[in-house]
Length: 354
Ligand code: COI
Image 1 (cartoon, protein in one colour):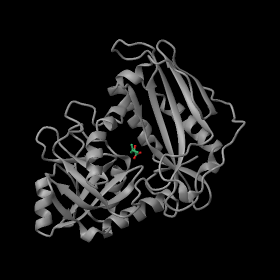
Image 2 (image 1 turned 30 degrees about the vertical axis):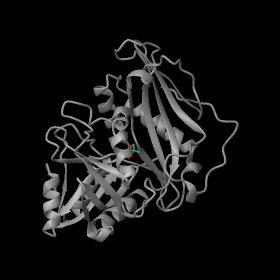
Image 3 (image 1 turned 45 degrees about the vertical axis):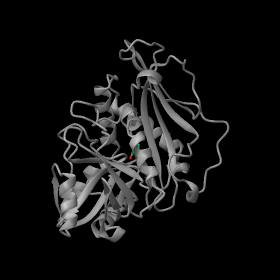
């Protein structure tokens, strides 16, 4: 499919790298494709970033039929624009689409559009270490209709946002509140998808945790309120007695993170034992009691690797590694960012040149 391009007549002033934060600024253009039942995806275009019109009855506002992805583009040491594992995210977008009754996207078209958009916006990729251009593809249901059924029309967008660290803490350890009062996802539900509703349901617990001085919530399994699953915007790893443990994906309640997957591969190659298994929060606390809980860290596209310094489970507060980033977390952060910024050879085929 041809991708037409309409350039903006009013390019924006770009922000300084030191004021980026996360998701506050948007580039000059966006990629858009429409869908209509019987016609398929059509009219792929790159147009100026900006508002578009739908009616108040637009289905996505009412029933939340919406999916999204998060990935990043970097400038490598030779000044080339590269993306990290984009096809893993595009495939996940289609897994989310299937579960949410959204038509499958053409992976090649998504990548071609994204590449063309990134080429056009290359100057928006920030240059400072720790910054990148966040890529946010998403699909929304656009029928103007109030009956509960899958929409017959959709819009696919890719928008871009120059970003720095996701958390204000940067690489300083975050404090995590373990909730056994609220749940994020149950078996048979949509926990494995990146659908807007998963984030909407997380807000109440996250706000409660924030009021208590915590950055994020650690969710336990919905059935027994016992096993650690994931943090609001990250997967989570525990280093116990030398072994890295993270929740398995088999229950369908956890997002299969691309950074999670990359970390597992890198850690194994670096000689660490990695176990994807059910881990109870009690086991985490017992390990701490025994002096065997060495590190805790989250992984995610937005967060990269974020050390966890404090856990609070029912007001039992424990400090991990004296509140400092652990050696393995640091090594994994260094490796993954070295690959992303092209300082280390990409022997995994994770880097796609734009
Ligand atoms: C990501 O890590 O890309 C995410 O989607 C997390 C969040 C900002 C929703």
